[in-house]
Length: 355
Ligand SMILES: Cc1ncc(COP(=O)(O)O)c(C=O)c1O
Image: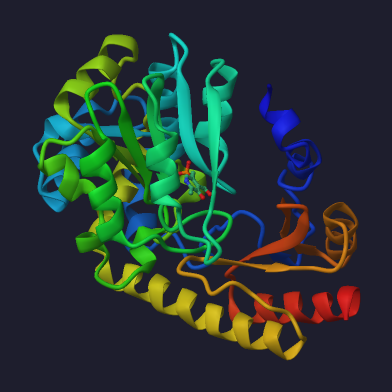
């Protein structure tokens, strides 16, 4: 079964995520309206003059910086042009010879889609009633053909959190040499004290875990394409046997990422402004009679009384870009956190379209 058969809306949803220069509020891709950080912008401009040279030295510098930050050695770090690249590469590598993938429903589809294109079976495990991963159900779904379990925490598109200590117990039970647990932490930085919640701790215990992280969200560098995976050195060796490390990276993004990692004021501002936007959006939605799912991320989702495609047409006609999802037969709107004035535009348009 193909991913399009499982999630037919993927077909028409794609038409709404392409560039829309005319939008008044672009709240459809969980981009960070505040980024890149001022220091990153300067570093990127400065790096442009070195565009004639390959960038291996800069890649090694960023790798070292990330390794120090994560508390692992450099042979654990795979740099990538965005975490999408880590998701896709790991799906290709794990499912070259078949097997199944255990992942939640609904989940972020990138890794699942690539795995299914490699002919993997997706063993779906429905999120619990409070939208956490059903880790018991996922452990039960693992069988001898399971090559990977994918956990996105906090999850996209729901914005909800599965307790890190429960994921740790799950990893201790499930991760083996033959079954990798992949934890997508794209939104982890929006949680207080996030480093203690990261599953990098399990890699340090020697477990077969891959953690994907990105500069696209809290760092506001989505268009600059930079992210990384943390994994056991033995896994990284398998990657190196197929792909030539660092060749998809560019100097500007590497220098921008290094500057952004050091610009902790900007990161704090992103987290603070996102939390404020969540408060504004939650209050506005409740006032209009909607029932949003409390979010731990830079987006929020809520049920809507209109078919997703018609809803998007109406919102886009007003210059407001959002996403629509069909979750268990119910229509939902997912809205990314933007600047306060963008959230006001969104709430006004929503009132006109649905209330
Ligand atoms: C959960 C999750 N993982 C990964 C990504 C991919 O991000 P990027 O490739 O920009 O790092 C996204 C982007 O929205 C995401 O929501």
